[in-house]
Image (tube, rainbow, N blue to C red):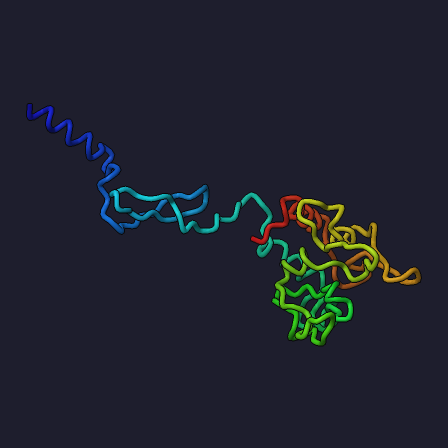
Length: 213
């Protein structure tokens, strides 16, 4: 009889040292796995059982995918003239035009830029262009040169609709007018260069969904 009682107690508690359902303390919180790379928490309810896993953290970046901050931003910095504030694509050299509804933010600094640099009013926008970080400028704002069509600098998952790729490859480039020119970037005779390997990284990042990681 004593042996049977001991077996029953072990079965109720769980032989792996964990508590069985219905044995937690009201309000007790434990960690849980929401999904691969994401951690959350569970809280003990009135029934003495833990509720669903919630308060989940953002999943850890997939190390197999191209990282925007660690890989793409450095390529832009060294190949697009974002040094200081007066480089080729720094804030004072290029920028949004309020008169064009803030399209074409060619400023590629990794900063949140907008109203404090591009002021004025247009179509009810009283404070100029909205502040947007570099990632949002790339994926949300249309190219100013493509006046008759809506073309984004980066379209996640689609190289053919990413004007950044067109400029790097020197193909399908828009013109502001019939008499204007549009050059491949960076120019072949400039101090800035971009390697085939760096181009491949940018294209891979776009094809992977242009993650903001």
